[in-house]
Amino acid sequence: MFVMYRKGFTLIELLAVIVILAIISLIAVPIVLNIVNDSNMESKKRSIDNYASALELALVEYQLDNNKSVYGSFQMVDGSLTNGDVTLDVKYDGQDVACDNVTVTQDGLVSLSSCSVDGQEIDYVHEMITNMTTLVDLSNNKTVGMYDNLQDALDVLKANNLTNVKIIVFGSHEIVASSSAEFGGSDTTNIVFVGGNSSAEIVVNRKGNLTNNKINAANANAIVTFDSITFDDTFAISTSTAWESAYTRYLGNFNFINCKFDFPIAPATAGKTYNFTNCLFNSNLNTKTYGIWIYSGDVTFEGCTFKGYRAIKIHDYTVQANVVINNNIFDSLTAKPGIVVGDVVAAGRVTVKITNNIFINANLPGDQGNYTYESDTMGPTEYSNNIVNGVVENSLRDTSSYDSWLASH
Image (cartoon, rainbow, N blue to C red; front, top):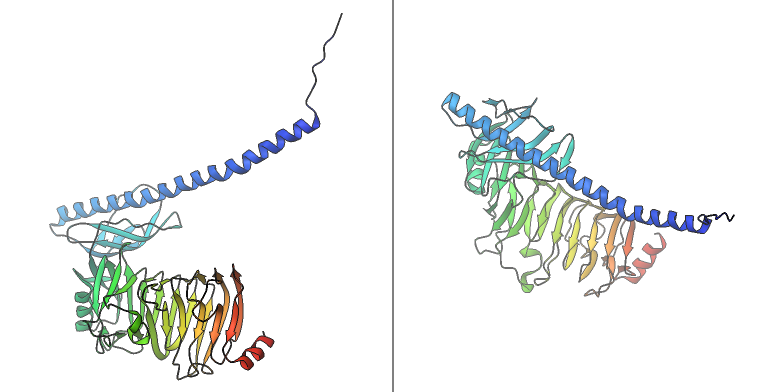
């Protein structure tokens, strides 16, 4: 009698199977997790849409019961919505939705933005409104009015000399810039512009005059904040006018959050503060502008991205001030890969800190060399950054100054 024995797996075969399974897991698990995360995100977006539908139904019920329409900007309070005069009971059964910006038009159109679902912030806008503005008096959270264009809202703000306001911007709007153009009245201390939808845009109109390039608040101590707004300009800039006169000058205290600049701007008031957080600067490749030209003021950049031709120009400072450039991305700029201090007027009067930034493709041929920082006479007081794909000079045109600065860094 013959007994046959089946040969088992060898250790090498078992190891091979384990390695194959591990490779499959490495490939499959991230894909599955991405599918789950995408599904979860879509579910949260649909929750925002469902809440908007419930709000629309609550509006209809209120109008039928009270024989009057309700519109304007609303605040969420303990699950209900109020505009200061009217409180709506929104019958909604789903994930917990909270939105900072809730706007209803006279036609019953609803927009929800700056929302969170179950405590998680969601980058999504329920968008029904296309082109209008809403002026809200933040002192009582009441809607002052809804307007077809931004300039009308600004005119009402100024005429009523409101102190603390929010203007929700839907779609693209023009504002007139000039030597006398002002936001608000003498008592206005706080103005917040908020993008109500993804197409929120402010276009500066100079009426064909190059010197009409000033934007400011009537109250020199007011704080003006722009949140989620794209900026552009009607001025036909050219290479011959690409220097400081072409840039829109902002005079006063300004905060820019999640903004996009398709036309260069210029902070230009000594003793004032300018904060740029998570902004995108697109400098024009054809007109050869900087993304921003800093004349004066204490200026801070945090989490911003610079693309296109040039990034930051620091120029013409006449009083002591600080510029802090931290945790930003300078992405493949074609002419000046980094930051420029342009003249001896600025040098010695401005303290420049350049830290934790990323310079990508900074080895592209610049018009005066490759550098992360360039100046006639001075170096930054703090310098610590990550250079990606490029050997970059920290260039100073004056060799002796450069040698002494390099030795101390």
